[in-house]
Amino acid sequence: MLVNIYRNIRRNITEDGLIVSSSGFLVKSMVGKIDFSRPLRILEIGSGRGAFTREIIQRMCQQSQLDVCEIKADYNPWIEQIMTNHPDKQAQLHNCCVTQLLTQADTYDVILSSLPLKNFEGMKDNNAFLYRVIQALKHGLKEGGIYLQYQYFKSNKADIESIFGKPMDDVDFVPLNILPAFVYSMTKDVSSQRA
Image 1: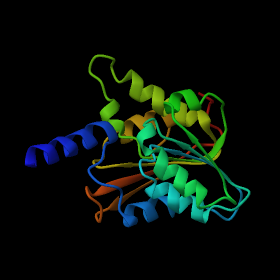
Image 2: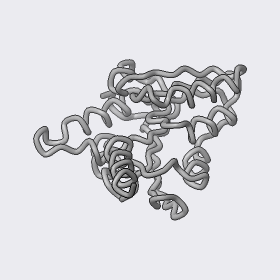
Image 3: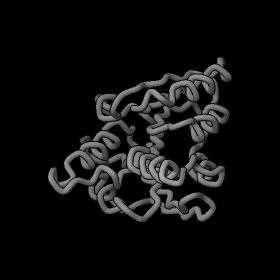
């Protein structure tokens, strides 16, 4: 029994980067940084069962568009149910790697990510996949757009800053989450070179 619980926790951390779903405090900290007063094109990456999806879709206006990118189709029923509950909202689910989705430049006003970036670090490839993911995020973000990312430790901050070519705009600490989390906020400069 305990062995199975341990295996499930270990698998969740390795595959999804989490132990349990994000707390309401973390969701509100991340989603609270989005200005929903105007139509937005939003990309949510790594939705899981939809803790962030639910809050985003409730707050966004009818003219906004939400793309949800979740590589694991196991989570589709939860995301599809959230979308069904909001038929007046424009939302689409994509089961693919985010690097496949972010091929067009300057597409999104907001990119909100639950990706476990630390898991993408690789000794053999010199972090090539990690950098490819962050480059894709920058590439797909409109100038002046905001990239929101949470991490359980203050990891990958320097990687993000290096690719965006500037210091992080803001780092918040959310203690009331399992595990406590840091929320990164990075805007893409208007003068930023396109990736």
